[in-house]
Amino acid sequence: MKKNLAALTVLLMIATPMVAQASPESDLKEFRSHFTNMFPEVPVDDFINGVYSVDEASRAQWEQFEEFPPYEIYISKGEDLFNKKFANGKSFATCFPDYRKGVRQNYPKFDTASGEVVTLEGDINKCLTDNGEKPFGWKKGKIAYVGAYLAYMSRGNKLDVKIPNDAAAMDAYNRGKKHFYAKRGQLNMSCADCHYYNPGKKIRADILSPALGQPTGFPVYRNKWAAVGGDGMGTLHRRYGGCNKQVRAKPFAAQSDEYKALEYFHTYMSNGLEVNGPSLRK
Image (cartoon, rainbow, N blue to C red):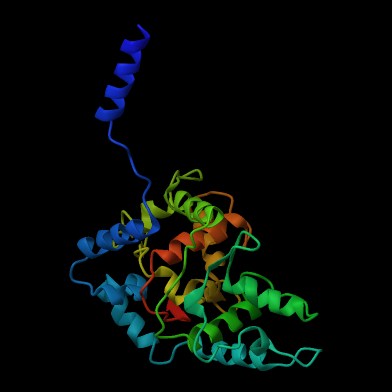
């Protein structure tokens, strides 16, 4: 009986194919193919322009706005903040020595020493606290201005997010991937429902943008944010929170482990596309 059971076990192992876990590289290839197959007329490099890459009417309006982009003033404000001396005589340039060459394309990154995903906003505030200064708020205001300046200095550089051969890094990546595809909220919707399966389609009066290329333009100036008060600028985590609210889910805190993992996966899926932040969105 034991011999028969052992033989049956071996037969089942041979007959049942092993399902290999997808690698980030294979995820990226499949992710990009999904969008290039869905929108064969859109050059892959144009996906950095969000909904304006897939809707002609929206693009025409956007191109008019870009003649006098409303985010330009915030690039200047970010430059002033970046160059302002801290009380100890140092500045942000101490923490970002390669800013003239561009640094935005390398974020988010995984720090193997701490076992955590590090975002650009995280390093901006770390620079402040390491130099005895008070940190900025996470979602808008000064942190978005400095981010806008660093993104502007990085324009044209291609996203190059690394997933090191490290168990904690892979765990963060997979948590972000799970978050992207998981349904949540009273509307039972995921990031993927809108931006992977249905880009180009309307939801109420808005046209959904493709997930491919979305992170390249952040921080962004949104007309919607400006219309409700404030200056219109915001970080990627501000946008994540807004998306969660729209599906009637309680948002996570900006720079939470959940949103940092989501940004890690989301941005890696746009590796190889050019940074074009700050950008203008509806």
